[in-house]
Length: 476
Image (tube, rainbow, N blue to C red; front, side):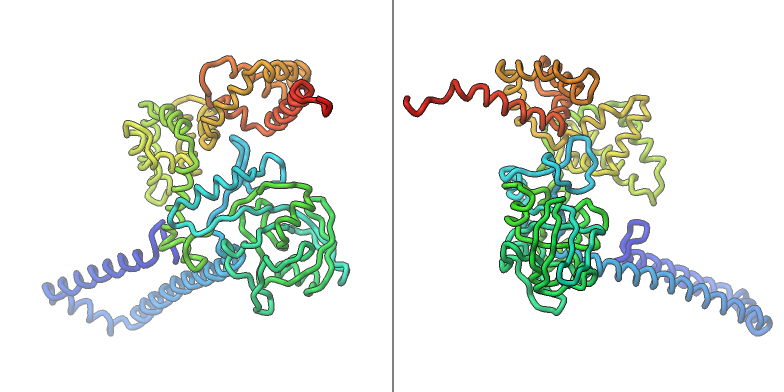
């Protein structure tokens, strides 16, 4: 359904029809009251035939141009949507893991971008608390390239390999082959894959062909079980437009990547038959699910810290100024109005949490803070840690303050080159450990991938050092 000025097309059409009806009714009433003017207007038609014909021709041409432009636009939109809908199947939302203050550009194969099994199970369980959600599944997405050894054709352009579970159909829907048959991931052997239709065309591939596949740089040899009737292209994959896609069993993907567990993507399917039906009228259900996720995965303490920071007269005045200066076509006008309503409440609400995760609202907050003369650094930090769990951060801080962990941490800082990014992060962590409570700065530090990697190595070294003292010999 087309949207004009943020208003659904049927609503716009109704308003225009009512306006035309009012104008016509006004003309009829005017003609009934002023018969002389009516006769003068009608008398000009036969007297100035050339002008009358030109006016009619102009009206017809204008109507034709407007109708054609709208029709072409709707046709293109429908065509693009039809193509894209096939490439996203039943996937309506997706979760990725990203570092604090990082941009959400999709999933990568860095260790810090992977959900652990426990984290993925928690995300899936909490996402299913929304009654509109039908299923959620963890998958692994990685870039790749390949050579079809049967046809000697190769492809490396925007190739993404997905490691998917056997019940992938619960989020995608029924997979179909290019010949129209049904396909099932559960039927794949460990060395078998499905390939997308464009990839099949590029490689001139058929079922039974052997592929030399490179998954994130890791080589493996697989056999094509079937060619799909579309590409698998949920845009969240973070590899640009996916021209070529491959589906392989999740366990096989982990074996090739030498990764025993974890997922870097979690796909969500809403209740419905797929496509627009899952999202509801004008996307209302999709918006409702997204807002529920923002509330569910926003830390209450982090939201309270952001609320307290924004609830100052100066910042609220700037938000109101942004709202007053926005035109009715500007989508930020409605968001700034909602933000003002929430900031004037006595405490944090779920509506505020949902707004805080919206990119347009983030921009409104940035402009408001800048309008007060402050730098937005603190705002960025507060927004960046909205999904960092305060209780988990508190437990981590308690662990880091223990002497057997803090001592090696101090030694690590001294061993790092002065002024290096790693040294600055670790120095900042030490400073935060001496402060009471868990601050947004501490949450931001612990969300840094460099710190996480160094902390894992540090804890591993502490364990190794304490191992001889906590074990007994076989003779004992």
